[in-house]
Structure formats: C-alpha cells, structure tokens
Amino acid sequence: MPRSSPPAYLEAVTNEILAKYRKLDAVISHAPTKGSYHEKILRDVIRNYLPSTFSTGEGFIINIDSETSSQLDILVVDNLDPRSYGYKENDFFIASDIAVTCFGEVKSYATKNDFISSFHKLVKAKQVIKELPAKTTSFMFCYDARASEESFRAWVDEAIGQIPDRDQTRQWHYPDYVFCLKKNVFLERKEVPGRGFQYIAAIQRDSSSTYIQQKMMQELFQCVTNGCGRMRKYQGIRMFREQTPDGSDF
Image (cartoon, rainbow, N blue to C red; front, side, top):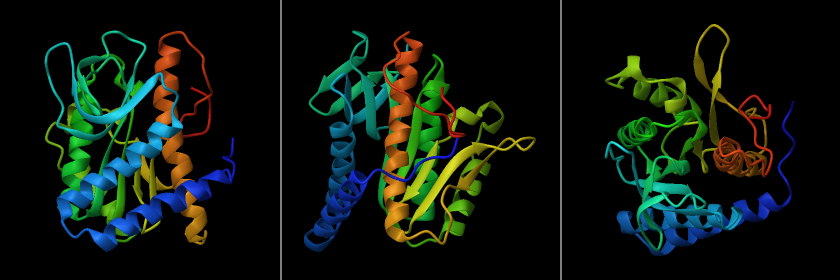
C-alpha cells in the first residue's frame, strides 16, 4: 500500500523545528549545551504528538537481569504498566525493557565516528530488551552532517561491519530509520528478499527539500506510533493503526 503525502500540519512542525535549531545555532556556540537543546526540541515534538498514556524523556533501559543500556537521548515509555520505571524524575527515566516502545539518538552535527558510536549504542540498547524486542522501534536523528547520502550509507555499512557479536545480532536489533534533516537524508531499514535487510533511501532524490523534510517528520512519527501500537497490540489493546516498513498493518 503506497504511503500518502505528508499531512499539511507537518509543514508547520518541520518549520518550527528548523526555526528553533537555527535560533540555537545563532546564539549558542557551546557544543554540549547546543546538543542538549537539540535533543529537548525533538523530545518535546514527540511528547506533544503522543497521548498521555506514554511518556517521553531520556535515560536508560534496564531488564530483569539488571543489564542496562547506555544513556539514550529519547525514550518513549508506556505508562499503563506499573512496572514501567525503576526510577523516574521529571524527564529522566530508568525504564523497564518491558515498557519501552521507542528510543532514539540525536546528533547535532554527525561525524563518522559519532555516527558509528551512536549506531552501536542503539543496537546494544535493543539487545537489552529481552521480551519481544522486535516490537520496539528505534531511530537516529541527525540535525546536520558534513556528509552526503552516499556517506551515510557507507557509515551504516561500516557500523554494521564493526559490530563485535554480529552473528548474535538480529535484523530487529538495528535502527528502523536514519534521518539527517539538513542534508535531506532519509534511510529506512527494509527486508530485501534473498538478501536479508538493507538501508534504503525512502524518498526520490528529485523530490523538493521541503517535501523530504516533511516526509521525514511523518516517518519519525510513524516510527514512534509503530512502537506504541505494537505495545498495545501485545497487551491485547487495539488503539490505532500502525504499519510495518512495507506499509502493511502490524
């Protein structure tokens, strides 16, 4: 089933994010501070998109064996399960693996080494999730990078090649999406018959920059929605439609 064009309101959301990023870039030069605010901007966008039955913050994932992920920039957690949090204070969570629906890493300006490190962090975080990890989605969102789409593809291939326990790493452990907003890079993990999976450019290169950025936001929201929807379906609750990467219902 083909995906529809982005809803009109996504233009306003995209423009709001870009405007906030540009304002920060103009007044803040301290890289760690800038990075923290870039993460907050995206967390706020996701939080405003989701119902209150899910919380959006940052922090760690922990499982029943006390295995813990690295700190993650974005964590979306189900609030309905009383076991959801080992610790919660404002937007900082130590969340149980059984309640995490989606997580992501945010990079203000991605370099190859930063990208590979964050890619590995996302893979390892998914491996911490023991109970049906395929239901949880993940993504990397880069605001900018000195890189082309071809560079991002090469970085992904290099990151996958450097995973130490690759034989124990399954397709669903890898990030669902890689975005770079200012470079209009939008890669989606898809299964290729007879070839396992690949990261494929989800938008034609001749599309306009505005369209690509709006489409990115649509797919970011779809990624978050998929994780939340799969959690509800796992719980036996059908709340809204969510899709697999090929466009079919989960």
